Length: 542
Image (cartoon, rainbow, N blue to C red; front, top):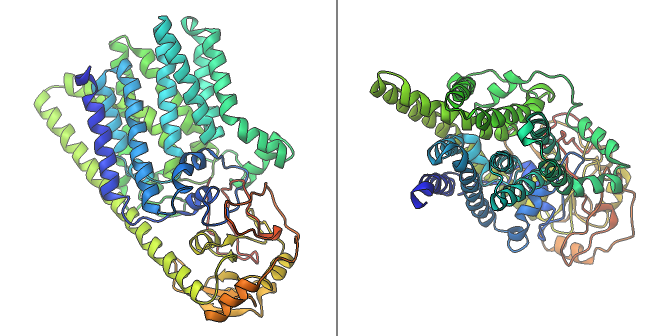
C-alpha cells in the first residue's frame, strides 16, 4: 500500500515545494483575488461582488484571512492546500488507472505554468479542477464496485465533489453534471437511482447559496443569470480557440485577445494534448478499460466547451478543469507509447527530452508571470503609501482606475459611479467627500469626473500600464497631521443614495461606515470603468 501511493505523494510534495519556492515569495493579490479576499477581510471593506461570482473561494480562504492580514500566510496556506487537493485527486484515480498513470497525469498537470501560478492564488478554477477529478473518479468507482462499503464511500465522495464544484463555480458544475448524468442514464449497468440522486443532490447543495442570493438580491435566478451573462460579454457563439492559444504565452487575461502569437512554443503542448488523449483512448480500448478513459475525456471536453465556444475572451485558468481531466488519458497514452513503440530506448529518450523541453518552457513563462506580479505588488504599495501621505486614511473611499486593489491596500472602500461595478451615485460621492477622505484615480491625460473637477490633483507613482496616474483628492482629504485631525472629527450624516446590483455586507471591523459606502457583496467579471465612465477600462473576470 505504501509503495502504491509514494509516487502520488512525491508529485504532490514536489508541486507544493515548487510553489513555495517559485511563486509564493513577494507575489501580490490580483484584481479578482482582491474581490474574493475582501469579502471576509477585517482589515478593509468588501469590494463590489457582482452577479457571476460565487463565494466558494471566499469560504476557502476565510480561516486565514480572518486571522491575519499577511499575504504570505495566505499564499502558503493555499499552496499547501492545493498540494493536498492534487494528492487526493491522484489517490482517487490510482484505483482506476494505476498509481503510475495517476502520478504521471498529476505531474503533467502540476507542471503547467497555469497550475503552478494559481495553486497559491485565491481563485476558484483550480479547485473546480480538483472537484471534477474527484467527482468523475468516484462516479466510475461507484459504477464498477457494488460492495456496500466501497459503494457508500464512492457515492459520498461523488456528492461531496459535485457540491464542492458547484460552491466554487455553479456554471462549471452544470457542465460537469451534464455528461455524468448522461452517462448514468445511457449505460445500463450505471443506471442507478442512487447515483442520479447523489448527482442532483450534490449540485443542489453546492449551488444553494448562489441561488438563494439570486432570489434575495436579483429578482430571481433568471435575472441573475441574465445579469451574469451581460457582465461576461453576453454569452453566445464565440470561437475562442485562437484566443486561448495566444493567452498561453503568459497572459492571465486576454480580453480583448488581439495580441500576436510571438511565442509559439508556449502553446505547442496544447496541440499535442488531443493526440495524446486519443492515444490514451486507444490504449484503454485495447486494455478493455475504455469507459475509464472515455468518461473523463467527455467530461473534460464538456468543461472546455463553454470557454471555447461561448465566451468571447480567454483566460488560461478557465480551462484548468478540462486540462486536469484530459491529462488522464494523455498520461495513459504516454505510458502506452513508451511501452510499445520501437525502438523502445529511442522512443523513451525522445519522450524524456520532449517533457524536459516542455517543463523548461513552462518554467520560463511562470517566471515572467511571477515577476510581473511582484512588480505589480511593489507598484501598488508605492501608490498606497503616497495616498496615505496625502491624507487618504480609513474611513476612506477610492474610485476610478484600479480602485479595488488600491483601496484594499489602503484600507478603504472601493466604489464606482458607473459600469458593471456601479455602487454609488455621483451625488453621493460628492457628499461623502465632504465628510471623509475620497480619491478618484485617473490615468494619463483623462479628465476627472464632473463631481471631482475642482478637487486637489496629485501625481502618483505609475502602475503597470498606467503612466501618468493622478489622484483627485476630495476636500476632506488633508495631508499630514491636519488630515489626521480631520479624519478623527468626521462623522456620518446619514444614508446617501446608492445604486447596486447586489447585496451589502457590513465588514467585520469596529469602525462603521455610512450606508453610502457600505461594502457590497456579489461578484463580477466585467470591465470596471472610471468613476466618470471614461475609457481605458481594465477587464475583470469572474
